[in-house]
Length: 53
Image (cartoon, rainbow, N blue to C red; front, top):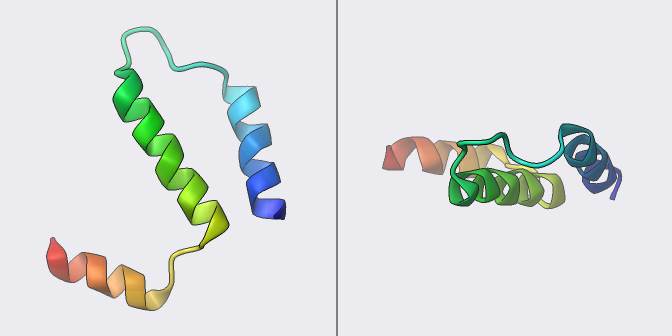
């Protein structure tokens, strides 16, 4: 829960996306950050992602 709270505080400090930034890409990045805060990546997930690339 602490990771999610820290992420929230980081987002509040950062504010809205900069002008000219794709909101879809900005939001996608935020969703990935939230996912990682809730379920941190494991070694198995990292190796699986590397194999797909």
